[in-house]
Length: 94
Image 1 (spheres, rainbow, N blue to C red):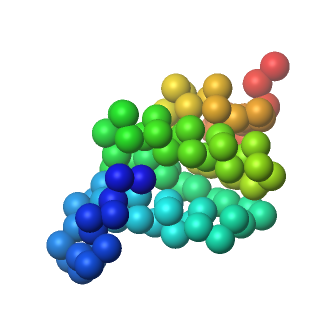
Image 2 (cartoon, rainbow, N blue to C red):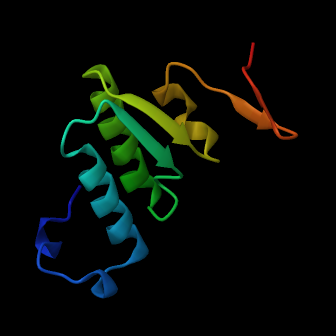
């Protein structure tokens, strides 16, 4: 996640993106069975967001079920199923 230099930093000293990366690392550290991720890349630059998605893909291949909510359509290829919210309803594209 590119954050080992932050190990002694206090939360108030961190940027939103740094806090986001720490949260993602904490979510994955114990190999969860299920990971819920609501806009996990919202505070991240595109390059770091792509790295997070690759990390999630690797976790999914190792058996972690990931439910991810995003507004970024570029992340659709990382998943094996996706739905779109239309007028308050989940719709599975054809």
